[in-house]
Length: 359
Image (cartoon, rainbow, N blue to C red):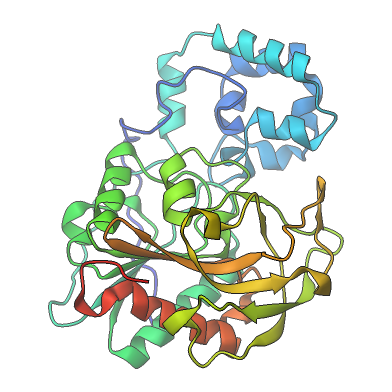
């Protein structure tokens, strides 16, 4: 079984973090608002209720924390939305200067620690990446890690698990067959690391993401959300959060669905998305039958209708991306249907030696 690589001390904050020079606004992560006394004072003056809708512990200006993955605009949608007040707040925030301390605090949640990995040359390599700046669901992360490691052991692959973004480097990725985004939450890559991951995938690499990797309230990298994953999360049930539901193997499943039953029942936290990823060219592997559970979230009805994908694959350039929204409950990484799907998906992302994606 693979264990996480030893985490080195964090270095001086990265200088190329994505939002370092962004104007203060209602679309900035709340973490960057509450870290600034000036910005926080503006919110307290114009829209004081925004920062009282969530427990104080969820709004800390240090990662990992919920405040890294939600904006003031999204917090406004959680309550009685007031477009005029939000516009007034946005204008006031944009007038604030960006100070050196603001840039430092914004970059503090990113890292550039060098990953000194010893990688074999005679086995396919799976890199499990587990860095979170938003929400970290420890039991799910650990269960997914051991499930992937067990699959790799059966297949004769080498697994490396790391929680430092220094591993998202062209030299390391050049040795890797597939990267697993293990319930990653929050914006975790610097601009140069983003370029490295994008180049890796579009030039023929494999990418597999589990559950929370597509479950943030806000994303601050459009390519990740819209191209690599291919769907926008809008919520999950809350009352109750975990429900039994019927999962359906889709007609497009292909080799990833081989051996799966036509349907099976699982209990999990079921994600809904703004639109089916099928509309953007994804091939759906599994759907969820909305008639078998109650899709009502924080903002009310989150039904997607008859086509509610829960796992899918897509070509991204020459590379392959697979996402499964199953997996908040750790026991689902031992469920035979989900494990079979993940194993077949990993095989597909590796491409059987081909550097061109084919569904």
